[in-house]
Image 1: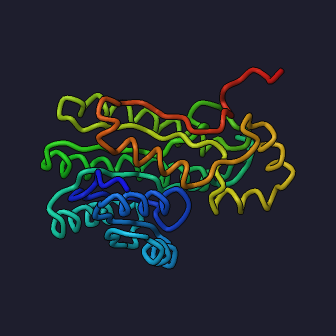
Image 2: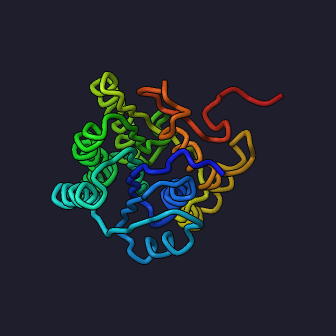
Length: 255
């Protein structure tokens, strides 16, 4: 078993389920002291209970609140004295509406939860990582940062924004050896996607058939890439958005 995160302190948001849960578990298995955040306290408890190894501390945090994120990072500094890696993963899909029908309040909520949270995360993570001397930040974007999925204007806008924020943060911090990258999942069988699929099974089946791999991704598969981006193995990867989508965005067609 890899132990490349021994002695390291890692933050994971959206850790109550899906990719965030699997990433928190993987970081812990590889030796990290993990601070896991989510709004879903019961989900966090499950994440902590099923962790195979390592140490996971959980906190109910609204990642879109500056006060709560500032306090969360201050708590990490007080308890652990350092931060080596952060995985800003929390997010929501929002509703599905044409732009002219999209409720403005819902649009604002998606942008707040998905994009503002990444900005706030990096705003308070970067100074603590800089004190450590080096580190890595990974932000969860989406294939929707490359495409224009109909009906999902708020989600696509937020994920395009995460791509841009990631590149700016990477440029600003590369000389300090703080690596900032983004993970862009495709169709992944997370609880959020499964719930959305249940509401529109015909669309879900069509989406799966459109993926060259002919299946959705598993949260663990995406978490492996997030952990890799945070590890010494990715030491020369700066400002990239790594697409992990079963070939969804390849384009073209199969003979």
